[in-house]
Length: 221
Image 1: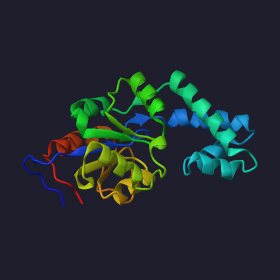
Image 2: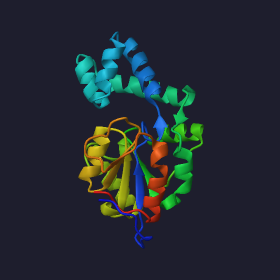
Image 3: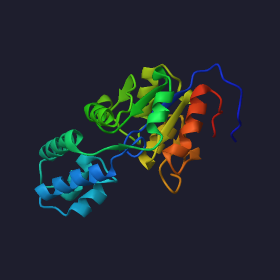
């Protein structure tokens, strides 16, 4: 159950996924994989469907097992970096208001991407940057392991029970749940299994996230 409560003296923290949560990058990701697939003579739609469900190295093993995975990854990274410089990005409605409304020391980004790309995207969309970013290079185990979210909490000096995770994907939701955190889902018509609350859009979640961060809203378990 959830109940509104008086302001809490305990600090609250919000940990955000990036792609699909704060920023709409679906068309960019699809285009990157389309170009990558064409380079290797593969069917772009089939490759993208695999890439949606697996990490890049696992995707390569599925769609082109005879190719050097290091070469494949280098080509993908090149395309992704080009996209950060030239692609069109859009933050979801409410993202700017939300991030500017949070104390700078109370939130972090937890992404399966790399920090330099996240910074490039945020600069292009005008979103503020937090002091803590846990990216793919910061952890040996990615989502759905709890490690990324636990690492972010530790860097913020936060207890897992005081953290709210905002996610859009099943792997991220599982990562937050396994870390012992409250997890809310956004930007999906149907709730991801396991989330404590579900919002069809980030915009709809904004006042509730700000209330959580201020200690005005209790956890929903």
